[in-house]
Structures are given as structure tokens and as C-alpha cells.
Length: 488
Image 1 (tube, one colour):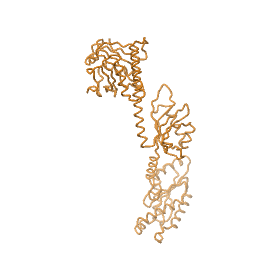
Image 2 (cartoon, helix red, strand yellow):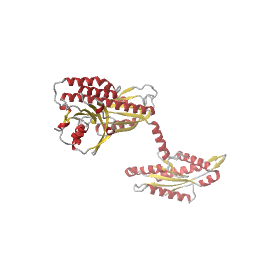
Image 3 (tube, rainbow, N blue to C red):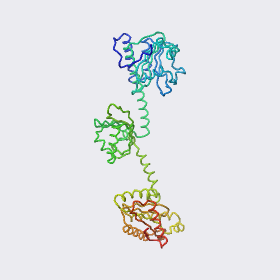
Image 4 (cartoon, rainbow, N blue to C red):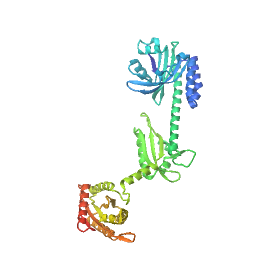
């Protein structure tokens, strides 16, 4: 006779014996401590003791499955009740986080059966002369019953009863009732896991503004806790919104993208939902939040509910915007820098290709700027640069892009601008600079600017070629008298 195993859901009903009634009474006696979670560890130990005493077995135990690989399984002897000290195994070194190779066919079949959620009933002497019989005899086990503990459709561990005195046979009702005990144990473990995660979330909430949320697309509502929306309230409350009410809280530019990503998450097998958006708090202020959700989806049924957490990331967003500004902006003048300017130039080739709209590129260089630095010092030179940038800002259009691309070198990108318009605009700027001297300690510092520009009308021209053409025109302006505008 091999292992007696089978589907727990297909056990044939039998007349409930007195032992069955006693097992049921033992389960119910321990159920309150286990289900309420108050002293659940003690509750499980109490349940194992009740089962052991009622069934008169030698040992009742729980193994936890820690890891399964193709070559081995790692388990831990988590709980045990024993009728006599000689049957004690918990605490022995070879049962503490022990690793068992998956070599023996019998053991592999046993593990696979437990993974499927099946029970195993064994009388040692009736087993074939193979590995399992030898293994059980080495532990003095005459009969064994094991029932898997299943959590979230995964094999978490095993509830086992060993009898070292008798070759007992378990009835279908006995096995069914013992499976009920495994359900209570599963419930206790789930509650403890939930309690641990809640404690972690509470610690997280102590350090950042964080709220829990849940959206039910079928019922059309969303609820969340109040930490982010009402940060000044000491008492955390659960707030319920209709979709319409919640959408009003979301910044208009983020409403449709959020709905699209949520629908996509519900419809497809996307493992995570993560999105940044602005939301209005109860005080009317918009704050950046990051929404996050991980979900295990059932492929057989549609999932209409998603849940997760979101937290206030306004400071992070502010820091990111500051760093981006610093990376793309000249710190002295506040103008965009060369890197940003070159990326903007590349974007201008698209409308040129589609609509044949030319654009102009100008490079400006303050004349004899080194003499200003040498005579008055770099501090005064910085003031001249700042004034020059302000003068340029007043003389460019809102659609133009003005950048500082070097020490005293600047550039202007003029979208949708032909040669005549660019020439007129740049000559006006050139005159304005010369007519706006810098006053330093009642001394007038007059300076001028040389400008070279080019008009890009062919989409095949590369950005670096446009720069070279404008730069060559600037060279011509410098060497033909300065304070002028030259077309390249």
C-alpha cells in the first residue's frame, strides 16, 4: 500500500463519529483565540494540543514552507505539540530551517501532492520498502496524516499528526474536520501578516503623508483615508467619493490620463499601477501625489476593484523641478543654457518639414567684453551681462527663445521667421543695446553687440550646420566693425 492521498473536496460523507464530534469541539474551543488574533500564536498551540489530546496521537506539528526549488525544499518546524517528551522534535537542529533535496521520487510526489492541496494518510508498515518507509521508521512513526495549509492559493505549510504507538486509520469525516482546523490556522496567519503590514504602513505614515485607497469601477466610487487630503486632522477618517467627486479633486490636466491608466490596469494583466498626479486637498491647495498599487488578478473573473496607497510627493517634485531648472538654466541671467537651447533647435525642424515654416538662428557676442572685466572687475562684468539679457528679453517676441550659450555669447531662436523679419528685429536689438549703457558709480559704460544670423529653410540642414552658419556670420560682424548684424 502506498500513500493514501486525495482531493479534500471529494471526500465521501460519513456518519460523524464520537471522535469527529470531539475534533469539532476541539477546533471550536480554540477558534476564538485564533480568529480574533488575540494571542494567535498561543491559539495555534492551544489548537494543536486540543487535537493531540482528542485524537491521542503522539505528535501534532506544523511545517512552514520557506522555499521550493527544482533541486530542494526549505522548511521550518514552526509549531508542535507532543504527548510525551520522547516525541518532541521542535528545536532539534535538523528541524530548524532544514533543507531537503528533491531526489527521491516518493518525496517529490509527496511535495507535489501537498502543493495541489491534497491530504496524505500513511500507515508506515503498509508502505513499499522504499525511502519514505525508512524515513518514517527512523522517527518511530507508525501512522501519519498531513493536510496542507493553503494561503492565497499557495502552499504555505503542512499540518501533520504523527502516531508513534498505533497504526490508526483516519475516516473521511476526521480528515474533513482536520482540514477545518487548517482553515483556522490559515486565517490566523493571514491576520498576522495583515497586522505586520499594517504596522509597516503605520511606520511609513509616521514619516511621510500617506493614505490608503480603493477604487471600485463597478460601483463607481473610490474611498481613501484622510492623511493626505486633511493633513491637519489628528483623527484619521475614511472618506468616500463618487467618481465625479474624485475627478473634481484631480488637477484637470491629469484627469483623463489617470482614468486611462486605471482602465488599462483593470483590463489587462499589468502587475503594477504607478502614477503621479496633482490632487486638491480639502484646503483647496493642489499637492503632488504618487499613486501605487500591486494586485494579484484572477484570470477567470474580471477584477473591478483596485487598491493601494498614495503619498504626498510635493517636496520631491519641487526638488526635481529645481534640479531640472538648474540643469537647463544659466544661473546668472536666468536664461536657458546651451544644452537646452540645442534641444529646442531640434524641435523646430518638425514644423519646418510639415508646414515649410522657416526659422532664424542668431548668435550674439558683446563687443570688447574682456576690457570691461579687466577695467572694472568681474562683478561689474556680471552686472553688464545681466543688463544685456534684460535688454534682449525686452526686444524678443514671446515665441522666441533666448539663451546664454557661453561667457559673453548669447543666442536667439526665432520660429516662423524669414530673413527680413529677423534682420529688422535683430538690428532693433543691436541699437537698443548700444543706447542702453550700464551705469557704474556714476560712470557710464557703453557697450555694443555683434550679431550673426542665418535662416533655416531646408529641413535637411542639421542643427550643428545652422550653428556654424550663424557663428561664421558673427565672425564677419566682428571683423567688419562690430555693433552690427550680418546674415550668414
